[in-house]
Amino acid sequence: MSARRLLRAGIARYDRGDLVPRSDERTGFGGGARWMARAMGQTLDAAGTRRAARLATLKYGAALTAALISGALASRLHVVAGLVAFVLAFYAVEVQGLFLLPLVVKGTPHPLSRSRSLVAASGGTARAVLAVLPIAAWMIFAGVGRGFVRAWCEGCLAVIVWYEEAERA
Image (cartoon, rainbow, N blue to C red; front, side):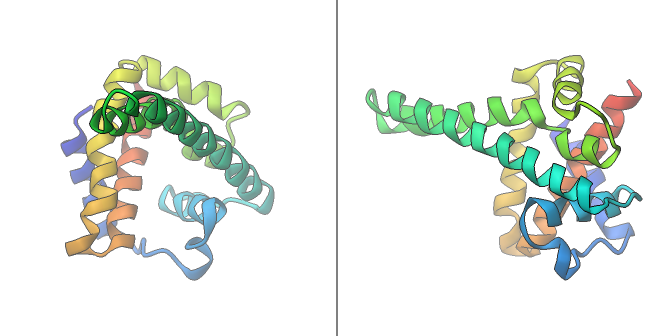
């Protein structure tokens, strides 16, 4: 899984379709899940939207908690160590649910455990973090020249491409 290849595929997919988020797809994890469903050619009902929002909140809450604890502990050594620990801990936890939203969209009964299985089959946590970091950087920083919503969507589409490949493998 090459982050560069995945991003190129995500950018191409964004350019091919009408994937500018609609107003109801721009707010919160539920809106993001509805956008992702549309990007995947699916629909997400109200219950699926609530489930996606709840699980994404738990995922990012756990990732942020791990990051804050790790960053605080490592910053006792050096501020740079704290920053590195924050980022690595955040993404080490975050990638466990890397495919969480696509799996919710697909109606998978246990999306977190399935996501963890797909991450493991794709090479494990360390490999996933190494691929996610450039995608996340794109989502956060490429917006300066491309538009922040567009860059965010392109990164999300890169993850969808990765998910589809992982499911086929």
